[in-house]
Image 1 (cartoon, one colour):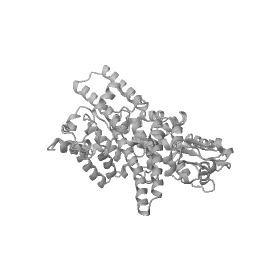
Image 2 (cartoon, helix red, strand yellow; image 1 turned 90 degrees about the vertical axis):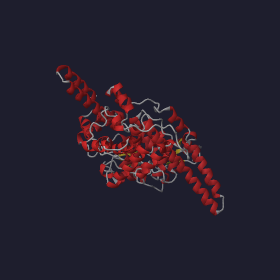
Image 3 (spheres, rainbow, N blue to C red; image 1 turned 60 degrees about the horizontal axis):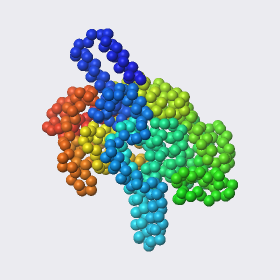
Image 4 (cartoon, rainbow, N blue to C red; image 1 turned 180 degrees about the horizontal axis):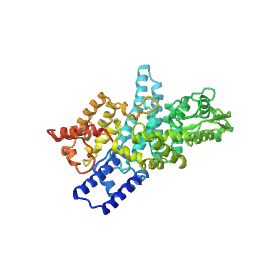
Length: 512
């Protein structure tokens, strides 16, 4: 709304003031630059196709389409076909879990040397499925038209972080993203929170599978408040951690789709969805006092009550709004915008899209578009691929891009600690990082064949050479802010390959 109103006022002034041809051209160039900056911020990186889309739809309609995306992922048919061929698409996580357990059962009956080999094979089975989740993520980021939803899926996967290497969490990553995170990425935070609390990957990662009556494990309860909802300064006590841990007893995963066998009086308290299970035999049914509220020992209803208290707490509104503001505006966003977003969050019952709309309509956000936000590795790799390969056939092999993220220190779903990857510039702007980014830029600009061949293939012989990206986008507004020094360096390049490398490695391209 803010950006649209600016453009309307600008158009009205044009009717009132006689502008020279040069002034009018400059005005149009400024408008294009702001649209390009907006697209660059709410997508994984601006492309000629995306810029054409916003100019056809207008800023307000474009924002609404991103905030409220269609149910379809907007992927090219060839990309969707490749995703559909992955094993994570062919077999559910529940089926894969059954296969893995069968592999372990078979291995357990073998001699010691063979047993170890069989157990490793079962472990590798999980790792391979997790690797496919990363492949799918890159395809979606580079080609989905629902760019904001895809960014927010990554944001929430990072906020509710799970490390694929913890236990068997990796085998559940596919459903974690597609059932718990992505459907709620722009919906109600309460629904998102509840979905993560029932996600096998989360329950494994933060040890709630070990949390039962008489043997309390506080790991998940602590991170649920400190990282996922209230924040470190959210006003809770150690007693709240202990009481929440008691509330969460019994949440875990099952080895089979059948409900667990429990005493007759507990049968109606069993809750099972896929391999998620609430087992009343492992639950502490004593009364709890959590965040000042007395909660009777009723079973799964306690978990829902705790989720309500956490999701609708003003501290959660502030914590989530602050993280969203940092993600979209960079380090130390003004307290004024966090306050506005928090009010919207509370008034809309945690509507994520409405909270983001408040952010995008604010003058604080408009000012941040002028300054730019430093890209973390995932934004850097995805934006480079989107720009460089826009107009080419869809890439057939995402693994080189996934490997680049690992090279840059941000491999998907491999952050060991539950806080997720940091978002501050200081975490990603070191000299070593910049050197590696130049190497990445060189590969993307000079060796696209890597992305177009599989299993020893030589790749398509007719893959066209990349154009000079700066020249090809000269009138788009995307590179209006390039410094004279950067333009001079690119201008002195001896080939389009070198020119594109310098552009992708430039200080300006490090910003979104």
